[in-house]
Picture (cartoon, protein in one colour):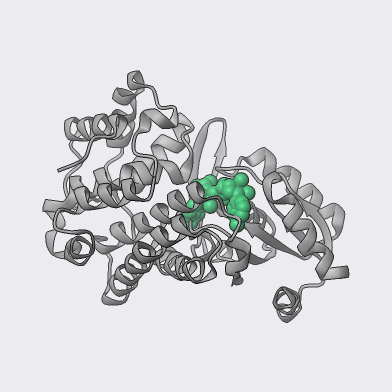
Length: 332
Ligand code: NAD
């Protein structure tokens, strides 16, 4: 971790506020101790979907500590908090990424206030330094590793058919999918092995970079709606929806999706479903706490504001997609 001290000092930082979730508090304390006087304080209340009230408390901790930078140690929730602070005061951000969500390499911040999730983009939101240390991911529970890996793969699948894709973003997407397809089953079998953990971080960096570079479509819109309005967990929702959103768009983006279909075997939706099932991913929205009675409303919300997607957003077809995802049926 002396690389972290170098990274802080190298950017001109002198007093870092260390951020984590309650779950990773001990890890954050250990790292803070190794930083000596560079660590000015610790805030360990990072929360999923970046609630604004938590950000306000973290801003108060930042000011009280006389901090000049933040060090986010964790996944998308902790990184989101660091971004929210930087969005408000332009703090230097150093991230030690410990899941596969990819937020550390995007200029995107999602925040929640009064039950509404809104997204902002901006150069100041992108962290200045990212550190990937596979040793810190050895303790990422297998179920979170699986869902988080599928969350990363969703960035790549949508990146492949993005309207503003380019040859480099597509190359990165395919390589990211390949790396995660290889790493995730190995992590399930041997969660303490460093090689697949390293490969998964490599894949998540590629997929996250694609997310930051090109526009997303139906899949991310659906997950944003389900997470923001129905409080479903982020990575697990991505894991459940990915085979269904891919099947929805498969015929409308056959050429763009061919490299992914080749990786997962012919029908992309079915292939991704079988892959997810084989690594023990959550398969049904009903298992994540979604109520069947809310599916109509979710379909309406997801179809309400028009946005680009390779296949037009048809409310009835979206409702059918959500029904399949709720039941955990295999898409064709
Ligand atoms: P998370 O950050 O909430 O982490 C899930 C849980 O795993 C937490 O309790 C965390 O402390 C724990 N954890 C993380 N790494 C660990 C490790 N190595 N060992 C042990 N425990 C560990 O989950 P996430 O899926 O990474 O992030 C979800 C959030 O990120 C959502 O709010 C989502 O909107 C946001 N996100 C934003 C972007 C973006 O570009 N803006 C991209 C992806 C996700």
